[in-house]
Image 1 (cartoon, protein in one colour):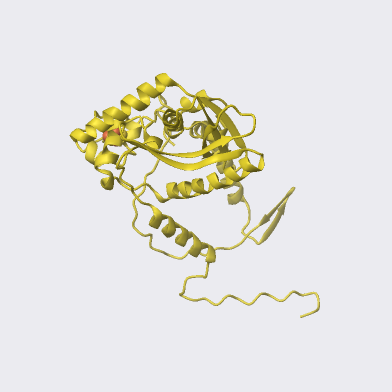
Image 2 (cartoon, rainbow, N blue to C red):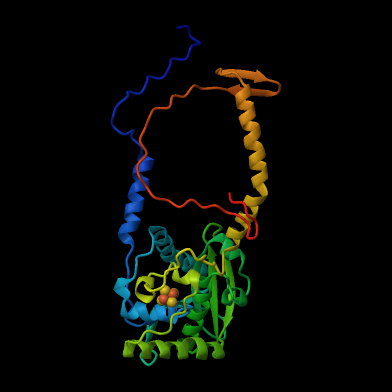
Length: 335
Ligand code: SF4
């Protein structure tokens, strides 16, 4: 071997043992860790953080059948865990800006309404006429980008964002304050959006007080409230096996009433690119059928690297999965 020749790397020993992959090990461990953290907490009172649920019957079940709720998936647990750390981070930044956190993590219980809550923090600074009930929320960038005003929260397409409005109105009610504040932290930008939340007495009366009383009385009487049967809520509801075992959605379509904008955008993009994909695949197939089998081919302005691959016989493990064919409503074709 002359001085300019690079020695080949020693060949890896072939073995029946699986190849060492720290990444695969960590991924599996992370999944198991998250699954181990998923936990269901039956409600002994109505929680203000959930009173904005569009289905009162689900709140009833959380209080009376909470330990029979079907567990949520591990991906959601990761989001919950991260959210808890964001509050600590947000408080540090607010204090660094010169604001005073005069109260943190205050638990309260309204015995009459049978409602409990946990006020994140009360914020003030010199010159402010009042301490402001502040709710910190971490948001994905898409959702954060849709929010500028309090109406964007109150009427947000995402039901979980709409619940934030009820939650903060509940705190304004119990803390007897005229004004609250949302401190919304973008989880990947690290950027804050601040939104004033004035107290809305008509909303509090209708959607906090009267609703809480209906739920309280239903729980005391052990009488479930009426079913809402809003399809996209029910199909992912952890209580549907108790609430509506008599209803099977069968082949009836599930109507997503408030689909996220990124889903709609992705559907349109997918449709726009579909023709290009077909043209690409046709050209790719033609090119590959016309090229000679060789490690290196030069053709016009292009260079082609070839590598011979062996395909062994293998057995595919049995599994079940959904094949999703998408087409525009009113158009017959499926893809
Ligand atoms: S299945 Fe539907 S109606 Fe029943 S509790 Fe859940 S969301 Fe409400």
